[in-house]
Image 1 (cartoon, helix red, strand yellow):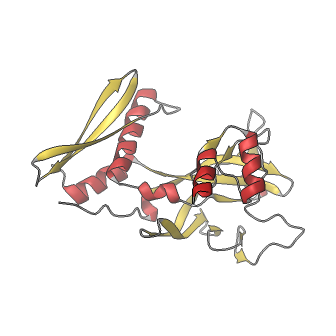
Image 2: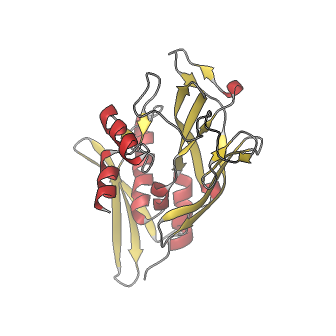
Length: 244
């Protein structure tokens, strides 16, 4: 019997810094959305029952895979979903096992809507940025999701806001511009819009696709996309638009 996987709530999703770009208008941070393994386990327990799912791991060609199997009562068999993991920066094996589990859970349907998350990019306060030993800007500021709503039919978010540690609104997908204290009207002509970004990587950061958050390694791909579509898109997302 088909069982509906619930959408993730703001409490289920963690925001992490993907990059900080230095511009003449200030430092702009790009955030990515993540779910952790505990979130996946809780949803598997809730939807299928604690004794009706299991996880196993195996190594194929040197890569660690996780298989999440769900018990199908009607078919009287286990239905497996699997995916490969990548190493973490701290604990390689443990991080790879956790990552493969989370990826396998996406195949089950948990958090798949995060692939449709909007590009979260806004200007940081000056006191939120420090220079790292490598000469690149970094921040210790923490942000969390204030609200989010997803339309399953349209397969897109209709609401998505981000707050800082003080509860101030820093990003709203439905507003033209956000500041560190309020939502305002469109930026004047002499001001850069909050989501402005260069068409190619600068020396202190890389570019990510504004649609799927994939790292764009070629500046030519980003530059062409910025010129044609008015935003940075990876090659695959450009192909999707051309075929639409």
